[in-house]
Every structure is written in C-alpha cells, then in structure tokens.
Image 1 (cartoon, rainbow, N blue to C red):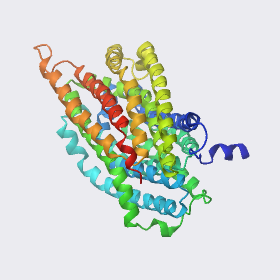
Image 2 (cartoon, rainbow, N blue to C red):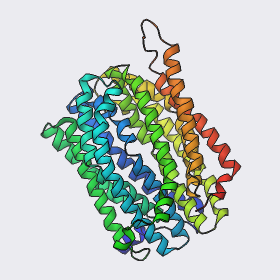
Image 3 (cartoon, rainbow, N blue to C red):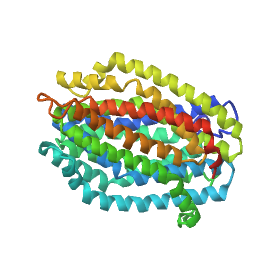
Length: 458
C-alpha cells in the first residue's frame, strides 16, 4: 500500500532532472489518453462489426458536432490546469483551494448549458451538413444521449485536469482504465447482446464516464494535505473565475474554431458518400492513437512549465522545453514508421470490407509524416500555455485551420473535378490537414523562440 501511495502522490516538477520528470509524468498520461481513445474506438469497432458500415459512418459523422459543443469543458479544463499547476508550484494553499472549488462550480454551470442547448441544435446541424438520410437518425440519437449524459464527460475532464495540475497523472489513469473496461463490457452487452445499435454505444460511454468522474472527485477530496475541499470554496469568486475563463477561453475558442472547420470539411466529406465517410471515421480513430504521445507531452509540458513558472524557475522551463520536445519527436517518428508498415492491418480491425480497408490505408499514409510536426507544435504550445500565454497557440491554430486547411481542402476539390469525379479527389481532405500541421509546427517554433510567452505568467 505504501508503494502505491508513493506512486500516486502529486509530483513536484520544480526539482530533479527535467526530462525524467516530464517522462514520468507523461507516460501515465499517455496510457490514459490511449485508454480514453478506446472509448470512441471501441464504439466504432463494435458498431462496424455488429451493425454495419453505415452505423460506423453515423458514429463518425456525429464527432465534429460533439466536439463543437463541448468547448466550454475544454476551456475550463485548460484554465484550471494552468492555475492549479502555478499555485501548486508557488505553494499557495488558499488560492489553490479557491481555484479548484470554482472549477467545479463552473463545470456544473457549463454542463447544464450543454445539456439544454446542444440537444436542441443537434438535428438542425446534421441537416445543415447534408448528412445522408441513411444515417442522420442514428447520428441524432447518438448525440442526444451523449449530450444529456454529458456531466460525466465534463467532470472527468476538468477534475482529471486538476489532478494533473497537482502533478498526479497516475490516479486519473487508473480511473480511466476502470471506466474503459466498463465501457467495453457495456458496448458488447448493449450492442452485441441486446441489439441497441448506436444508442447502445452512446449509453455505454455515458455510464463509463460518470464512473470515472466520481472516482476523480473521490481522489481530490482525499488530498487534504495540499488544499481544502470545502463548500465555501464552491462559491464563485469573480477574480478566480475570470482567470480560469481568461486562461482557458483561448483554448476553448481554438477547439471551437477547429471543430467548426471540421464541420465545414465534414460537409465536403459527406459529399463523397457513405464509403468515404466510413473511411474517414477509421482514419480518425487510428489518428487518435497516433496523436496520443503528442497530446500527452503537450499536457505534461503545460504542467511542467506551470509549476516551474510558479516557483520562479525560468531556467528549468527552457531546459525542459528542449528535452521534452526532442523526446516527443522521437516517439512520433517511431509511431509514423509503424503506421506506414502496419496500416493495412490497423484498418482491418474496424471492417471486413476490403475496399474500405484499402481506402482508409491510403488516406492514413498521407497524414503519417504530419505526426512528427505535431510533436513540435503540441510540446512548445504546452510550454507557452503553462507560462500563461494561451493566446499565441490559439492564434496559430486559428490561422492554420481557417486560412490553410479549409481553403486547401475546397481548392483541391474544385481543381480536381472531372466528369468521373464530380466532387474532386477525396485526398483533398487529408492533404489539407497535413498542410495545416506542417505550417503550424513552423509558426509555433518561431513564436516560441521569440520568447514573448515568458512575460505572461499568472
């Protein structure tokens, strides 16, 4: 028990070798992110194998709308993580307690808004995107269940973000692994045994996420040596709530714009038919796993930078940024190689349709090299966010999404139209995404080297 307690206690990242602290913190997060990605992946595998390719397309088509309408949670989570890590690094117990209490209250308010508003606009958005009639009802019912049960998703993401800000990436991992197992079991029960289709996978996800949220809350309530979990701290305090929103809003806006761009591109994707929609779903599921190291190191760098900025250890921030980015790039290079070699077998997990497997493998090959670029973007953006500069990564994402990805996608589609291909070449979707990743990495590196982010500490 003592060993388990020592392994799960919060990590002080202001002392010790930077690269070791970053890796030890990032590895549990990586495993946790992989487990979280299993939520959507298992959903897709189950519906693809037990219901059919159209059901697979339905689950995937709902994704951009789901991402658009949970941006409030993203914003609160990022703002919370930055403030918690900096106050933890500065050993400010009172400010840390107020911040965590305000995060919980803001999450509750955001959850109520999403439950009501999102449920009302889901079907109109699906129609706006020209979602094929063969899958639109499945998409809508899938979204409604997820939105109505969004409390688990919201509180898990925010509370696990708080735990990571405190340096505890292991507890969130353990709870996520538990809920992932629950999700898999319920997926098979609801879909394979009870024949509930896409509604079954949505219900399984909601139940599993609620369990993980409750476990995170239980863990936080036991960390009384670091902060106080009292009812009085749940009352919103203007200065703290504003800081959480101010720091998190850029990331929320970034996610919103990225999701809107996904919706715009989804409309183009839908024009290529159900087969390509299903292929896009498969690619995005594999992409989710390929991106996990990048996201994990990005979040680890945010916590690392936040704690060291709070402790006034600017020298450690620079050293850790270099070491963490190099490690992330190396891992992404290995993953890229594996995707290129084993891509066909990865796609075959989702469907037994040979044409769909080959189409998915081809599209995945276009993206492969981009994961190395994203390692640079996520790591250096994480450092800037941890220091309190959430605006620069936001603007970089906006520019690369709106002024690179969307125009390139529609431009290639228009220029490659022929009588045989009335909507142009399908590759336009993934070439545009790769272009935005490459340009984003270059611009992020330039802004990191300029160093203005060092002036933004909370």
